Length: 330
Image (cartoon, rainbow, N blue to C red):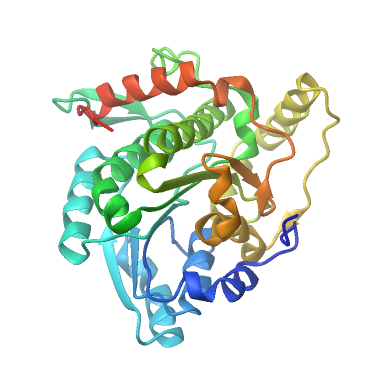
């Protein structure tokens, strides 16, 4: 039985697993101010990892975090790498920069994301850069697929490593629109369905990684961090009725699975980063490769079939390779 629950904090998790953090090289996405990614980084710093690589669009916004990490752990090498996950060119350039800095990555935690944003297509995808992709799908999933795959040689080196992908319980609202991730070029767009699609894609990707590379030492986990008041949720309050629609969709999704929906109490940022850190550090999870976690443990309620089936894993992988213009032979 796990020792972690709803109230566990990232600091508590790292304190227990100091020996699994010290001396490690860890890459984080999504460490902007007032985010679970930033709390993840601060928690890890307390156990003196060898190297922390923080990625983001703006170094100036991360300067306070970078300074805090250096104060907490002067021995830790801290690197900032510019990264816009919605841009194929930015992801590829970031990977080149990461490879200049380190030759081995022990843990990659992807917590960057956007939520229920208005419809926008991001160009520059596809083999020739001629494909446009809906922004939530591009930012939350597509960029991370490319980032992880391009860094897998460094992650698999010297016995393997861990990949942690922050998903959401919103994946239960709907799956991937295979062949039409752009919602008929926006004509059928819904903010919540697009968010759900991106988060379901992350769960499918996690299962694919575990299935394809588990025997090579890769451990991959997805998770729901909880309901957290952070900058991620700002768009929910920008459009009248959007929050209420999300609550309704969550309620209906639970009803379809035969459960009564209860609105989650909000977590603090420290509580919100704890499950990511359990996924990254807890040795007891090694026998649960590919699983979806909630409150520091494998979820009592597995994701729906559309978010886990091998058929959908393979369909998504193939369609994603087209969108990133590269085939990965794992």
